[in-house]
Length: 467
Image (cartoon, rainbow, N blue to C red; front, side):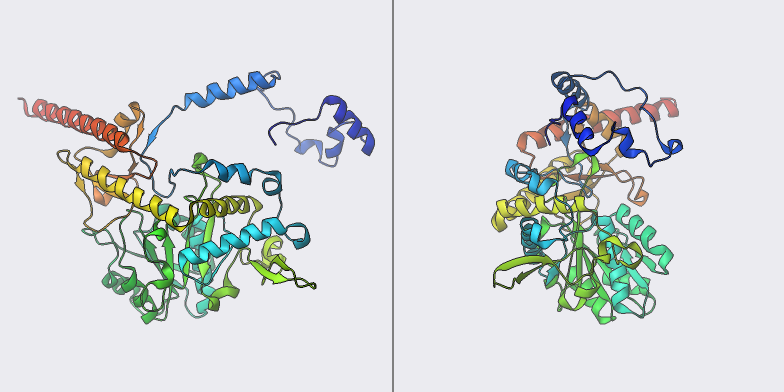
């Protein structure tokens, strides 16, 4: 809520009504030794106007940045109506809708979300949500192993987001599941079917992970990879960016049979960057895997009077509250982000999403063209890409990024820590929020910093050689 309306008198009257002398007495069952005590360093109380001014001043310290970082969290325009609707109390304060008779609005919104995501992914069923894209990938691996029954080996391309790979490995490693890393083609930037063959070594496979686009923004040969997985009796797990699906063929249409499971992060659909969260993960699958799918599932039904209604379906309550018996545990907050995604997609519609995707792609093409015109800068990979691209630089990316940040520009992600084999490499992203002036400003400062760094390097070499 925007403010807390209770006065001190209100609080005293409420405490008196329930027969308690103070708020502290409400927590008297907590042993004194476990209580934190009054927080240290908290200033004296301020009034609303003073608090507003203080928080505005602190927010301004962060500055206003021109952002060209992607790498799994993307700056998209979110229509004002999205959060105006979702912060209504009916949605904002709602708990898990176990009681259908009291939760029809929330359940219907989640049902509509599932319908839209099924259309977007081209698969039969979607859930109503997972924690984030990384944990959704781990859940898909677990789901594939449960469904396969005989194998616990999964091929994981190195072109999948490095953080997602680490999360998946952390979640599944103690369950006897082997994630086998598949190298990417250093020239094209994607995974070749021959690389799968070399990594697999034998046909004992539960699943193959297929990203589209991959971490580098490069498009993978998804038809070949999906068919290769099916030819080995393995499931195909698609890892997708939902915005890209407005233009690219959906996972359900990959290869001759389509991917079996599709996962991703829903952050591009109505969730602000917000310092890293909360976001939500999505999962879709075919009907044959429905019983293996974790997370909530909302279904449509009719009541005894023939009226249409919505309910949580096909899963027992312990799916959510009894950890030892659940295939997954999902928190309420992700339901709020899913609701925002439903409103976001409904407002934009298929054509609106396609316009966003086309604008993202066009901006990244234009940005890559401008930056590779700078001496010593080139694209790292020859493969087609969506709205991110990897550039190799004649100087350390960290140095270039520091210079750009001094000019108020967040210039991309340094790939040296995760992919040192590429050299001085920078992952850049330009979404529909950028215009021609933004691209020009980035390119101008980028060229200046690259040139300055090159001159410094030249002077250092001359000193070293004694010239």
